[in-house]
Image 1: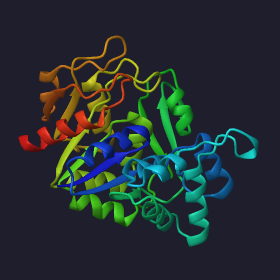
Image 2: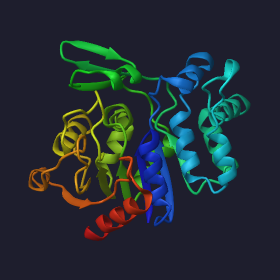
Image 3: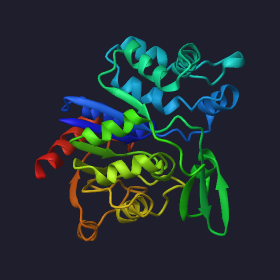
Image 4: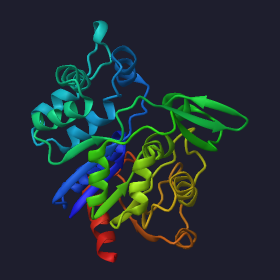
Length: 296
């Protein structure tokens, strides 16, 4: 089975670890709107797309576990404080090859990645959100907003997609959307016009893995239906099935109404997929994704 994961950050990394358990071919299409931390610094100083989410995905696919641990090391002193080594390696490879996409693919070779990682676009983009009567700019600022997010946009709005990412989506048997930050990772990636269009026209099964917990600021107060509605209002009809965590985590868990979800025209699969910390447990997520594939 050819599986493509779309999104960013630690959520997409969990999907890729899950896919390694059952997929014969794996690809990741990763958003590049991050403007915080090490990634943001490298974008501002070197003019390259932010490498952090891409690094996390490469590490999730790495066969060389010792190298993967090294790539995740963050410097704790001097001018390199806060930088992850893998981010610096990707930056160095970009300088050596003169091409960010080539650098990412070379990084995958060095880590002996079980699959390919593609940036959604190599253009430099900002994420902008409409919040109440105002606008908030930058992924970090959007993620930290306390007011409900009405809509998010890319600036510029029409960055060209990475061709290999579009080819991977077109060839996929299963496309996994999320988990991860709904607006600032998943939707931000699908806002690259060619990426969203490729998912909409895909003949593969499109599965939305809903977050198990609400995210302070970004999705606080949103149930699973609201998550799905936000996704489809930005990206169009792009979901065939939804995986939700059951039972709902006490306190900040994402609640769901199966019948209301089904009224959106999607298949619903409820299963215990969350780890104790609220993230998705790869083995459980793999089992859920395989179960959804069999339902088709």
